[in-house]
Image (tube, rainbow, N blue to C red; front, side, top):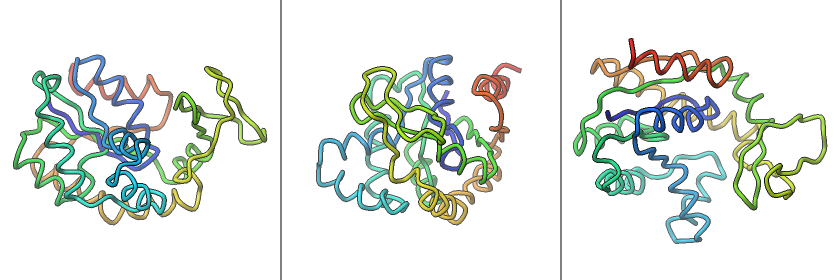
Length: 207
């Protein structure tokens, strides 16, 4: 099974992608994780990507497409894969379909204001890279795994989130029509508990 997971930033794609990949034994391909690894290693590609991501902009197609094309050629993708964070534009989708077929694109829909609230409460651990939802009325939060002080990612700040949602609406939302026209699209309500949303997704494949 070859799947794409779509939806605005903060819709829970990463969380749901992990559940889908585990349930159906798919390779979970997150372009965000791939880019963060490049940034952590301070490679030229990573430094270029970091400057764009910090401003809420998209990384150029040629970088992302090349990374994905190479990744799905690896052995763990033989039985299928799930793309999380790619494609983001019509151009990327067209490139993808030139080197791989796709069984379904699943779009997780969540209202903008709920996304802004979710991401305002998200904190990450700079040491173990864990991600947590916190009570924003408390000034300091610490990682339950390693004790490090949690931080807010620059791209989780409300002003950056609003910009990212604007970029999504302009450049990524048209993908919904792209995949709908090809009879590849399924849309899911992303509001509610994590397992509740996961159940809606599983129902698509197990009806």
